[in-house]
Amino acid sequence: MVKRLMVAVLALAAAASAWAQEKFPTRPIEFIVPWGPGGGADQVARKVGSLLEADLKVSFPVLNVPGASGNTGMAKLLAGANDGHAMSIFIADTYAQIATASPRWKPGDYVPLAIMIRQPSGFFVRSDGPYKTWNDLVKAAKANPGKLKVGVTGFGTLDDMTVNYFASKGIRMASVPYAKPGERYAAVLGGHADVLYEQAGDVRAMIDGGKLKPVIFFHTDRIYDVFPDVPASKELGFDIYLPQFRSIIVRAGTDPKRVKVLADAIEKAAKDPEYYAYLKQQWALRDSFIPGKDAQKFMDGELAAMKKVAALLPKK
Image (tube, rainbow, N blue to C red):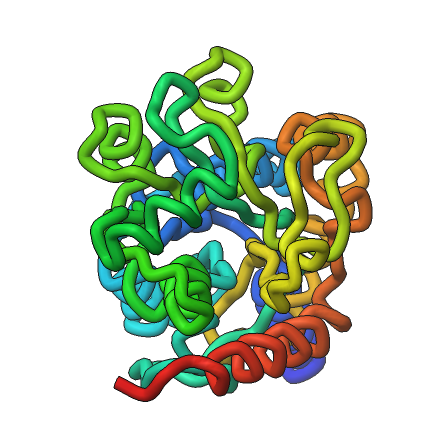
């Protein structure tokens, strides 16, 4: 009798232990943003985090870790435990460095949970500045090669690749990196930089307020519903269409069951009307969201496009 009782107790204990192991998450999940506050990466993290909090019933505190074109935040994620209690925004600017440099991380070091937002990038100038159109910038750059300054997120990023691409076409400008979005915006508005590389949605308040205006989008077609008068790079004969994407990743080695919990919750958040309204407000692509199972395939395709552009650039 005693033996049977002990077996039953042990069975119950094992069941309770299994239940405890399966319950996830049970505490806050740190949401790393490898860029400063206020930019697109920060915005998407806070929007998604608020939706996840309502669903998973734990908090998602945002931790801004700017520096080294996103690599400082990446190092923070990879140095932590792979227990699913930390995840990070991972964007095309950081990913692009595989095409131009040798970062300390590789694709196998992380697991993508989803692509959350995709947007065409462009060059923006002060609305009250000396340059009003793309042709104005081209004339100034050719008259004074290397003098025009472009505010970028960092060297080796999509921003920097684009600036170097135009240099290879005889339109030479200088990349000036800023780790924090607010510093980059202030530099252009204050006249310390001449051009801003950005996505329109990230600076919508400044566009709506009449402070910034786009002069070119790096896209196959014009964004007719919003900026019908702004040319696309393809129509001008420039084969540069690298869009910005912002994804969410966890460290490789995270329990697949926990990965699924997070990925499923993120997909649910992406289908929320509040998130759709956010994409619309950001002037993002309507089909921005790509679930985790397809995310790496998309990223592989983007890397191939980045390497194609990098191959066109002069060797330093």
